[in-house]
Length: 379
Image 1: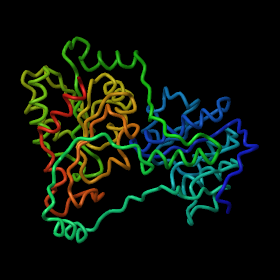
Image 2 (image 1 turned 60 degrees about the horizontal axis):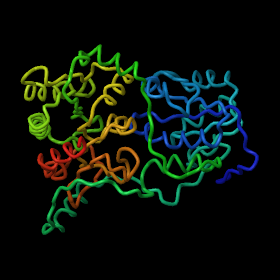
Image 3 (image 1 turned 30 degrees about the vertical axis):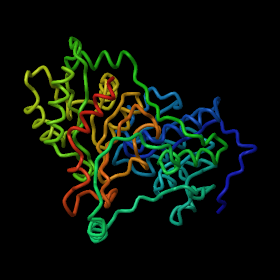
Image 4 (image 1 turned 180 degrees about the vertical axis):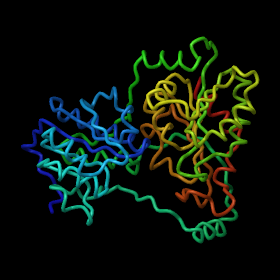
């Protein structure tokens, strides 16, 4: 199986991009999609995406068509749907066997994706791993305890920073794939779009149309697990302080599983009641996008909505703990609009769902540092 793709005569008319399955990852693919559009401005580009992410792509400038599939839809059903479209090139962004099999069974003659021993047979061109790629590896509990024990004298201060533009960020993984098609691999800011009509509709639906105060967003959940969540009592303290200093109105974001946390925050900061709108679990994806665009700043954990907000141009303030802003930070690495805060903990990032010790990476991030970052973001 070849690990390089000759591009001199590559002129596809109909391109299928098999999209990724998670919200944050999907946003990080947008630079590659924009570069693909630059390379093939006249091609018809269709995006195959899970139904849950369909609304993310409604107005994206790189996408001509959205083909969605349900969570329980079989490989054969998806392939049958694709076969009727008569694509001549498939760019497979996920690393799963299923995503490559879909393109094969759809009869797409050119199928390009990252090479893996367990799926190369399904691709016509298996692309070698990128030289600067950094693999995210979970630390074991024993490793974490050893790192902490051997670094007892280290001063663990929290600090806000703008992530440097490094070659380790996940957006480069997708840019490397489109570069194999001859596209420009230079970084591009993640980009999403909503319409003014969608923003006005969300304002009216959720009773925000008469709000004159600045609107800030707060997203306290994280689907991956508690190791990515700044403690709720710290969110409450920061939200109260910011509200006192800015007279802002807070929108609380999240999924249905975040209802307990957002209700706790609503009760703590909702005095007067008009100062907080708890919309966790109440918005569609397109409504979420419209409301994130409406906010002047989003205080959030490292989550999918963090990536969405940054790609819409809304500044984000993010406490980082178990994950790495250098690998999966919001927006284009180096964007000064986004304020990322982390503790110099020897065990971070560990990439675990739950902390096996004392959760120092998040507990050590002070309310004061977050408040200062939010106020700086809205100057």
